[in-house]
Amino acid sequence: MEHIFEENIHRFEHKEVILGIDEAGRGPVLGPMVYACLFYPKENEDLLKMISVDDSKRLSSQNRDKINEKIRSFKDKFGWRIHIMSPEYLSCEMQRKKKNNLNEISHSAAINLIKYVINCEVKVKEVYIDTVGPPDTYRSKLMNIFPGINITVKPKADALFPSVSGASILAKVKRDDFLSNWWTQTSVESCDFNGNKISNYEQGSGYPGDPKTKEFLRRVFDPVFGFPNIVRFSWSTASEIIEKHGYSVNWGEQELSNNQQKINFNRPQQNGKLFCSKFA
Image 1 (tube, rainbow, N blue to C red):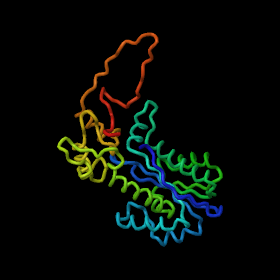
Image 2: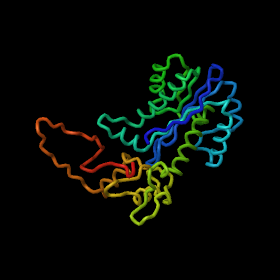
Image 3: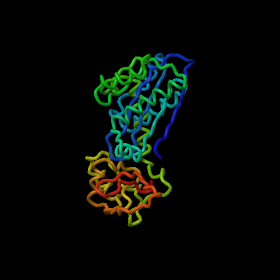
């Protein structure tokens, strides 16, 4: 699994719409990064405010779930698209020969959301988005791609604009759902060497500095196969475990005849050690 999409595309009788974009999960070492856009005619914004949308980080998980359900219950009032990017995809993008950093991946995700909605014949008039990198640079980049749209890029946009607040809630709830059931995305549920189900381990917040997350990484690491596919193996917290505890691999050079071609499997590696996901 590299990408999963979910959507409720509504053209609103070709009325002009406001579109907000936000993400969940840029920094954690565990789980996907999720981008979401929420769009609607301006006349529906009062309904969104009445639902009490806010920056998802300010809300309890219970309140996020309730607001998420309310937004989804108004399918004829709001449109959305959600893009889930797997930990494996993020790590491979950041470790490929021509590396993509997290900002570039984030920019591409946001741009593709806008393009997709426009290509569905939705009349996007205004876009509000939380900045990734310098806001003026990001806005100029977006304006060059979408010259006919009024674009606002602000830090903390999820606390300033209802459309971005709503998108942040859709993204956060979707990411939390994935983290709660991540092992169901694999063909077999992972167990440690003692037969204990990894899904029973406490993951913590998923952020690299969380002691519970560090303990989770230590417990699920396999010196041959690496980590389960919930882990972003390119993050330093994970790669340091691979470097310290992973088995080294010696890649022997083999002479090839003139009519043989050397195959490059292009697996990310460092200092002779593979960065891989178990049960990928």
